Structures are given as structure tokens and as C-alpha cells.
Image (cartoon, rainbow, N blue to C red; front, top):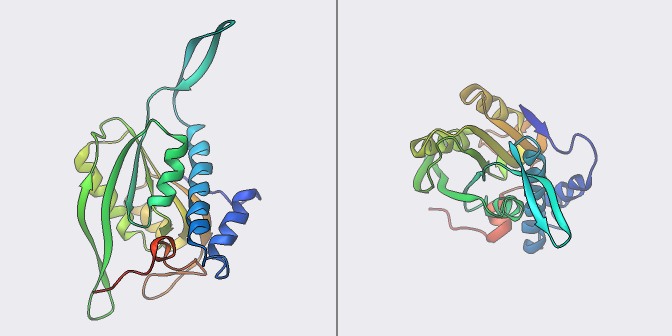
Length: 216
């Protein structure tokens, strides 16, 4: 399942526009906050599909029967670019367990790149709902490798992916490699450059959030 959260207008469309706008991108705090807000919207939408139980709660005036989440999810993100989107999810799933993965493109002399994974911190994922946040789903290579890496920590009941901008090429790659994953996108673009960057996209989400990194 692939959900384009901007297929129908909501305020999320305004936030995606600001993420793309080079004049607004100069404000790092606003860039991070817009990613965070997209994560919040995605959290609310995902929660509608999650199992719940009924709970009787005592109030000052009596008792109330309400619906509450059956089990907390595990929120995972790919460092460093995924942190603002992850925070948005955590704002809503505020009792969730968390996992962190270090994954990056290791560029080779011929201009190609490979995905390097060097660090993981995760709870047991057996029979849990796993929600992975990554602001840009371009080729899909790092995301698929991250999912495979996280499987070493247990077999998740469901896997959701939350991304701000996704490319159709990356979506198709994820669907072929991980057909049971549900993808939630702030917006979907169709073009991918030879170097694996989304067009029109928004640039490098990590650099725009935290400053330009030194490339070795």
C-alpha cells in the first residue's frame, strides 16, 4: 500500500511546498519543523489502522469507556536526516520504543555509491508494529537494506515507512523487495537523476536540517 498524503489538499501540502522552496530552506528551524509536522500527520493516519482495546477510566465524575492503543509501536529512523521526521512521529506516539540506524551513501571513484550500515540500536521487534522514517525515498536502496538489517532484531508484525518526498523509482524498488511494507509519502515525484537524487525533490534533507557535511 502506498499513500500519498498530499493527493488531496490539506495543510501538509503547504509544509511540503516550504520544504522545497529555496527561499524558505534557509531557515533550518522551519525546515526541521515542517518535517516534524509531516511526521505528526503520518502518525495520526497510521494510528487509525492500528489495533486498539477498550479501557474503563475513572474520572472525577464517574467512569468512561474509551478506546486506547493496544500496543506501542517501535519508531525507527536513519541517522541523521531522519531525526526531525522521527521526532514528529514521537510527538504523537509518545510512549513508543525507538530504534536508530546509521546508513549513508558511500560514494565510489566512478561516481556510483553503495549503502554503508555501521550502527544499530533497537529493542526486540518480534510481533511489533515498526514505523521507519526517512525524509527522502530516492532509489530505495538504503531503506531496503535498513529493513533487512532491522530484521536481525526480530520479526515485526507490520512495517510502515514514512517519508516526506518519495520517487516512483524508489517506491517500486521497495514494493518489489518488501511487498508487505506500507509507504506513507508527503509527496511523490517521478524523476531520479543518474546520481540518485529526486527531481524536483528538495535537495539534501540532512544538510538542510543540520548543516553541510564534509564529504570524504
